[in-house]
Length: 256
Image (cartoon, rainbow, N blue to C red; front, side):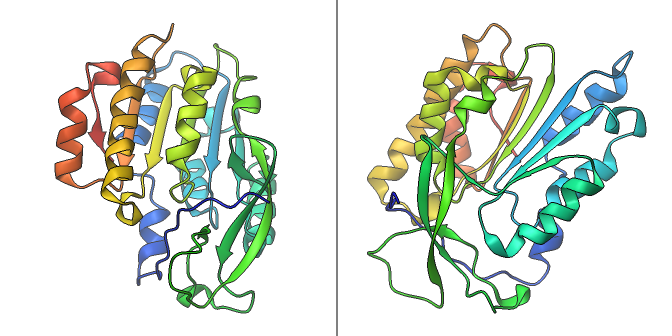
């Protein structure tokens, strides 16, 4: 499997699951507001890429009015085996689909650090992409299947309303350029990205910020640019730098 030199190892803090389970950022608010003002239900697509235990997806589906919920196709993507049972049940509850794969730039596999199989949820370490240069913590290395996320994204239809949450544990710095070049992001109406800059060197962080700047410029050229883009995990200083270069796509960059 492919090993990516990037990691984000952290312990869950008390209440963290509850915060992750509340999709209250401005992207979701714009999504729900636009649906509530729609004259009639449309075909709606919701993708939770890096779903963890599915709390975000479950809460979002609860927030959807019934007339829109019935028109929504939910897909959750999560490679960690420890969450397979929960996500299988969640997908069945909302007539959705669970994909036990990691989002990547090509089909194949990725190596992850993951918590031990017998670890309690309260003390778990969030799975992250392998960085062999970092000190070892209580974890195991697992190889998980991966798909080229651009391939199914390019099958999305322009007439669908598409919301994607992307939380891929710092792999966004590789995945997003691929999705930009392929044109897949032009089919997304509402995009929420969880960034993980704290583990990056200054040079890689600078490249990551440049990626955000370029992303907004490129998405301006879409036939139908995204209606809302949210960035979570960036400091106010980093957000100001993003906003300085955001030239109007989806109203500029906003914090989550």
